[in-house]
Image 1 (cartoon, rainbow, N blue to C red):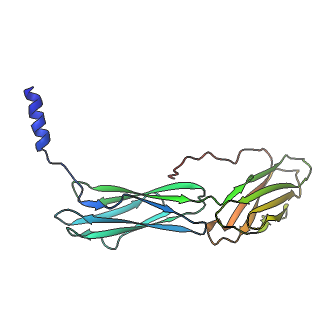
Image 2: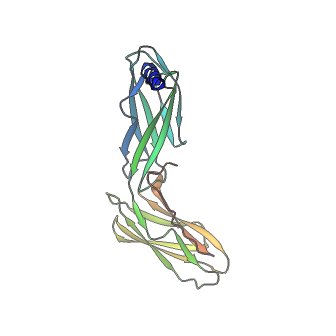
Image 3: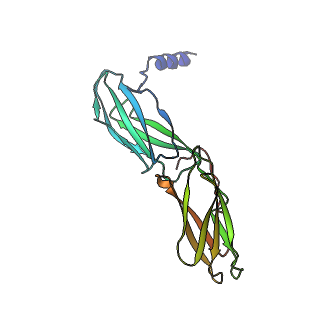
Length: 231
């Protein structure tokens, strides 16, 4: 019993370490639009202590995310903002989480982790990315359906084959909403993989939709995903 009381008094008298750098939010939620290449989020904070705090380093979880400060040292009571930017790239129809680690000279609480969470809308339903023929098959044309599921219509403009080893024809079924691509191989005697670029009227990184012709063994082009995506 005596030992328990001693431990109790040691516990309540021991100093408790609190971070001096107080963030208004450690998670910022953003929603991208179909025309966004990047999204930006701000993390505001305040030095809530009684001595200056210096932010020594900002580290992001990938090269697609940046974080910046106007200055490094903040006096007691002074506020600041970490400005972050996420490049969406080819993410689509997923919640993407990126992380920022803030390292300070505060001995009581050296690091803070911030989360930039972006909801990226789904733009297209594509029947399949790869269209297959077995070696020696007849050069029968095959079609791929593409539906625009974005909030606003998106125009598909052209289908450009990688080479003359195949032909591709784009047909509009419903303006801005439904399209069909007809793919025809020039020869099926040998194994081959070729790309078809479907050009859209978007001004983002998703301006091109890639489709593929493959002569050879068939495999699944559907990859399992887990949300939120953190890679």
